[in-house]
Image (cartoon, rainbow, N blue to C red; front, side, top):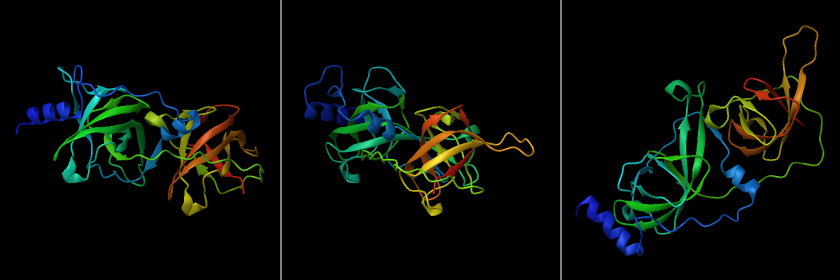
Length: 250
């Protein structure tokens, strides 16, 4: 059976369609803070396994970018355990200068959105884009979808640790400056005692002798991994930039 025939059969079996599109993406009823966290960046020190990825769309012309409601092809089917209705995050790795991902040169994991499987055969599947955080591209990889829980920051604010600083790393699309509400990453995680909801103070060293660090603002940990964490800016007096110091309140 040819690939073209397989696609046509999947579409015919799924439902009557116009212009080979999946069902329109429904309006999300997910709270805005959960949506923002689901789209937030993470840091990786290894190149993730990417067995599942988007291989193209279902239009008369070749496209590389997709939006909610578009029908896309996945390179896996029932032989790989794909079932109707499954949902997946759509992600890509972002690294400066196409460098190799290492602990010394970590990369950003960008969540571009998520999709729902619409029709399946043995080797391939069709899916509808449900939500887009950014442009979704051919080649983006898939991971199981679970909406995150937004951690609550503790009411009490103990003093920030001194002389045990993490550092501001990059954010979405390799951004290097951040303001209130933005997400950024740091080089500390659960191995260093960071937990979701942990509160931080962000400082800048102006490299002036016999002077205090300048307190830029505050942030809260919203996603924590072994040696890295994603923080959200809760208050800023000035932009946070890559390399600024981050101290946990303990």
